[in-house]
Each structure stands twice: as structure tokens, then as C-alpha cells.
Image 1 (tube, one colour):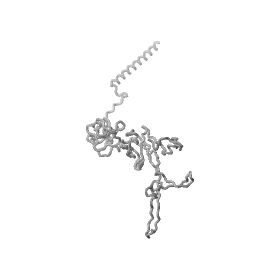
Image 2: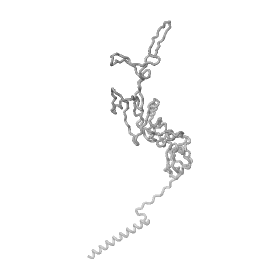
Image 3: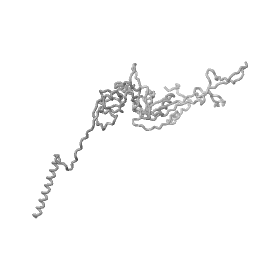
Image 4: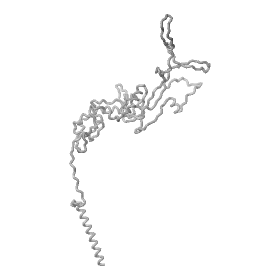
Length: 356
């Protein structure tokens, strides 16, 4: 029994000593007096070379002529400044124009500005491989000016088609004429082939023979009017981004005030358009779209051909391709189930020839 109690007391003493040693070690580690035991030597702080770079001290609007009062400099590590990226002094950046809106504190880089004579700001908004093309518009063809810069639209074209003589390239039917063969006259003089209209006052058109249903006789009919052209409409461009509504500001000597005034005038299109001297609203006469070079040629051809071009505003974020069918009178009648009115023995009075 005595031996067991002696062993138990020795075990307790050992445990107490271990606890005391552990407490001492923890205290020394927390006090910083423990060295060489599991510690990693501190990493020396590297000594970077610092340079001055230019940053915006206040917000700079796109297109603004940059002056010294909107810029300042800060220190920046040389190793993190690629050569030619930042401006080293305020004087180097003064006189340039901002290509984008620049927030305060943002470092000014060389690709964020252009020199005064380095081209237009609009060209930086045109993606590579694309072109900008302006269309003449009014409220009807421009979705009541709902489309603004950055929106996407589809362009619809409508044109009138008519039949022409392949050789003459003139509208059918052709006029009739009376010819006199070449020969000798009564006086012995030579005469050339001569062509005279069927009637001097009103030349007759080429007609056709038909059989009269009531008499059974063969008659020759001529058109009562010139050929009526046929209307066809189709989507010309599926998706085009609006680059500008109205005129672009002139680039030379543009300052913040003039750029802001132009932007505000453009934004007023939807709300209250600028008024002229008579107090009447004045709306933009054109809209500039971003299209492919081939679509630029197509739009230019249709505009010069007299086709009517209209825009339809697309949903925000919807950039998918929309497949449409060309629309003619027959297409409308068939797709909308519109029957051709029957000829009846009665009619509405008074007579109506045109819709109001």
C-alpha cells in the first residue's frame, strides 16, 4: 500500500512540473523572450523606388478638355508602373481630352485620353471591323425617339417594285406608235423611217386582246392608268447599336461646358425637346448606327433608291438574331386571314374612295 501511494504522489508531482513548464514557455513566447524555438525570422521590408503618377483629383466627363485643376500626383512603385502607361507630370496630361468618364482618384493612363488633334471621340466607340452610318429620321421612323445611345435597334426597309422593259428600262406597258417606212416621196426625195405617237396629245399604252363576256366579241383593252407599284417590306439589319441621336459635338476646342450642354440637349429628346424661336420643339433629324461595312453599303443604296427605312427598338440585352419573312399584300392577306371583299349588289352610301 505504501509503495502504491508513493508512486501516485510521484506521478502527480511530474504532472505539476509539466504544467508549470508549459505556463512558463507560453509566457515567454507571448513576452517575446523566446528565441530560436519554432520562430521564423521577420522578412525585411523591400525598399521600392517610387515615382510620381498623375491621378484625377475630381470627376472628369468624357470629352472634357483636361486642365491642371482636375489633376494631382501620387507616389507609385516603379516596378508596378509599365513604361509609357502613366503620366509622370500634370503638365504632360494638360491639353488632352478624356475618352471616357474618369472618377476621382483614378490614375490617368495614356489610353484614357487623346490629344486635341488625334481624331474624334466617337471613333473609339465603334468596334473594330464596324462602321458608323447616319440615317435621316423623324418621330415615325425613330420609334418616337425612344432609342438612345447604347440601345440596340433593328432596321426595316420598305420599297415599291414595278415592272420595266428590260431594254428600255422604262415602266411597262410601253406606248404604241405609228411608223412610216423609208422610201421616196411624191417629189422624188428620199424619206427616212419616222415614228409618230398613236395620238399626239395622249400616247396610248400597249394593251391586249380580250373576249367580251357579254357580246362574245374580241376587243382590244388598254390600261386605265399607269402601272401601280407593289410594296414589299423586310428586315434589313437584325441588330445595330445606336451610337448617337442627333448631331455630334464639334471636336475642336470642346470644353466641359459645351460637352455637357450637348449631352443635356440629347437627353432632352424624350422629355422636352429644345425649342426654336417660335417655341416649337426641335427634334434630331438623324440617328447614327454601328453596322458592318457591307450593311453600310446596303443602307446607303436603299436610302438613295428612295426606300423608306424605319427603326424598331429591341429589348435591353436581347442581341439574338430574329428571322423575319418579307411582307407583301398577299402575305398580309394570308397570315392575318383577311378575305378579298366580294362584289355585292349593294354598297355603303355615301361613297368612300379613301380612308381618312
